[in-house]
Image (cartoon, rainbow, N blue to C red; front, side):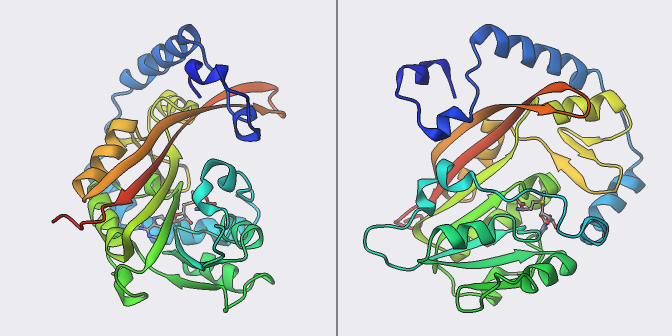
Length: 288
Ligand SMILES: C[S@@+](CC[C@H](N)C(=O)[O-])C[C@H]1O[C@@H](n2cnc3c(N)ncnc32)[C@H](O)[C@@H]1O
């Protein structure tokens, strides 16, 4: 939320965001920049390639260790994206959740909107098995399948130009930057003209990026880092994500940073989170 928004009547959505004044934001960004730019880690190319090649295996092991206990249900999505709310006509909407994990977005979204049908994919077979064995999994409203977005064609699973929405929540950050183009084209092909991508992911200068830089052995490339468990995390500036989607033929409906203040109760620390949130639309004329 920017300072200009502060004159409006606050909604529930606004209440969860933080208004950062210019001075505080500048301080936060400058501090983050200093730490991030001084991290000159060079992980040997052998290891960089290994992490990239073994991404699916490492995420699968992540779900073996953490099962359904790691991510919280994403109850904020329908406040942030009004496209997820039922429309007046009651027409069924078709949505694809990419990188669905164990369904922390899928199940709350199905419960909130009875006219949604959700395709849900992930490249971790364990995660998809957990989605399918969830007691709320109902084949008349959901189809979960294994798919690596960076190499498997989504059109093998659904009709081209058939979806109203694609949700991409903290999934593109797990994809190496050079593979994002394929993944974006992949979702472009299954969206209807006028269909939208709902995007939220880690923002540039987020506290998690500062933490990676401080460790000084995690940097795999510009804004790309590796966690202890071998999974990767990329941090997006608004310009970066916008240019990637526009290059694939999308138009930008909205693209902004979201600031949130969270508290780590164990360490009694306040943490400044920065997320990049956007909506991209497949143009109606399909490039003509
Ligand atoms: C941080 S989790 C987010 C899970 C879920 N979207 C949520 O918000 O709770 C990232 C997910 O993306 C999946 N993922 C990463 N790269 C992928 C790819 N190339 N194709 C399909 N899924 C991928 C991972 O297995 C993981 O489940």
